[in-house]
Length: 169
Image 1 (cartoon, rainbow, N blue to C red):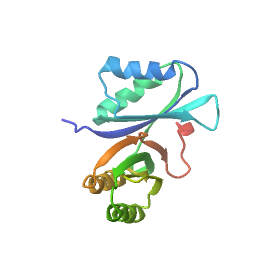
Image 2 (cartoon, rainbow, N blue to C red):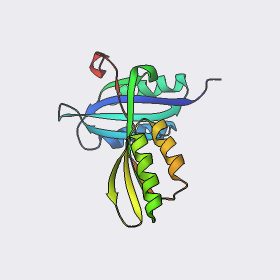
Image 3 (cartoon, rainbow, N blue to C red):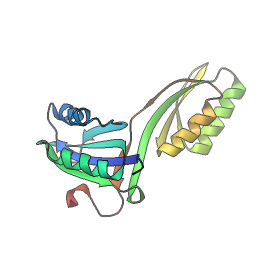
Image 4 (tube, one colour):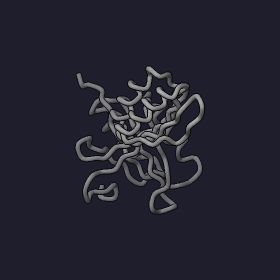
């Protein structure tokens, strides 16, 4: 039996109303779960790129890519290889920091992890983390002891390394 693991689908679509709904309906109809979804315009304002993270086995991810490619507003679909792609997410996390010592410790952690402090209040600090999922998770584990008040994630975005592009399909 094939093991489920995370896969990134990079999908170019027409930048028009209802496209996101069509794509999400296809996932829903087939019983697939989207773990992460990031969408934005590309270098061409008429085209958007969807970066979709799913947990499926190899056979299922190929089937999903094939089904996505059949949708009319879809221009191109590419399964990004983990070893040949750059994956990043943005995380904002608000942490309880009600003493000078606590703030100093969190600021020191922020420096070690190379994250930005984007808001300072009397009882909290808000950090901006940009990096791969592992970096975010490692920092969150350390911050749990201080008390995470709130957090939000963008979802993963990804590009292939080197000269290969989604247009080379």
